[in-house]
Length: 95
Image 1 (tube, one colour):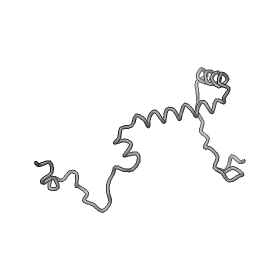
Image 2 (cartoon, rainbow, N blue to C red; image 1 turned 120 degrees about the vertical axis):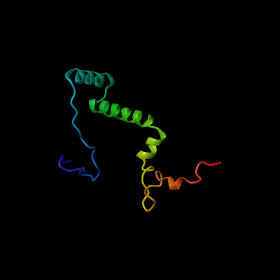
Image 3 (cartoon, helix red, strand yellow; image 1 turned 30 degrees about the vertical axis):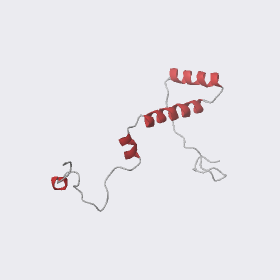
Image 4 (cartoon, rainbow, N blue to C red; image 1 turned 120 degrees about the horizontal axis):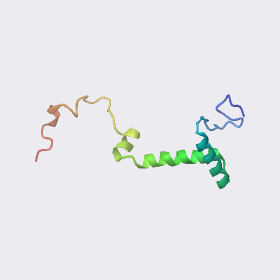
């Protein structure tokens, strides 16, 4: 396995590595929690990040989910001012 490649010797992608800085107190707490749980510090950090991302995604509105999914935006090949030009509103909302 080489740190200079994005692939391991077996051809699979390896995880991406980032650097995170902690205060001495936070690092002490992280080490203690890992020891108590019988796990690695990196596993605790990954779990915390996953939980944060899941929480954020769960709190998105339907609009935000649609926009994030690419369902909201400009449609190519149509009228550019469809939502703002009053001439397209004739008969809209009338009873």
